Length: 312
Ligand SMILES: [Ca+2]
Image (cartoon, rainbow, N blue to C red; front, side):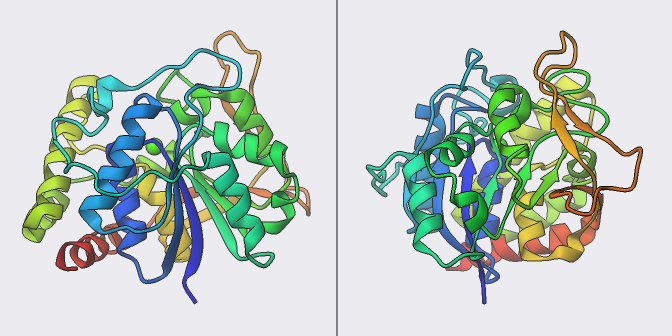
């Protein structure tokens, strides 16, 4: 049975690949795509989600969520994802219509419409929609199969020295999501920095061709340039697909069970995911973090999925 997921995202270059990975994998049943302001404004990321859905033939509902975080002002990542949010690539004009419902309602309705333990939430952007869904319908916490999110970092951040972008965008929302008590896997920077799009990966994507292959190659070229410029890295880490990959195949990464709390007040550390590795985790610890990635396995999953989408 394919795993049913709701992908909550802010496309975003790596989000776009996460969408294509979910759509192109027979192990995943993509029930809905919900959007959240993050890498770019809500308006732009929602348009991007619709464009990617159009390009890939995704027919699941796409619904727009929150334009800004719960408490702090909005911040976007144009220096990484470009003014459009998809680098220098012009995606096709969307033909898919936006679902009229708010993303928070789509998340709640989708989870509640399925039997307990069936729907997995995969947030790969700031956590505002997910936090509001918990507040709107607390029963989703018991009802989901699990939450597998891209965000956070146990050691080095990217938005600050210790905070990762998705969590730093809306720490209060992250606090709600991390303390809810549902089974939660944090696929953080420690893990995703092992998912490097190397020259070999670029060459494999180049072989896919067609509109989908060209689109991904163009996007990732922009992304690679941004990481060279901003970080001095030749092979950029592709964060968001790692969370989707873990839903497809548990063997793609090792995990460690550990309590994780969100720092809300530190002047230098706000938005940090504080993972407490000191003791054996409590028996009922609901959170775990990704530790070691099987990069070869990840890229096989991504490349196979892209090839499937391209040939459809
Ligand atoms: Ca994202």
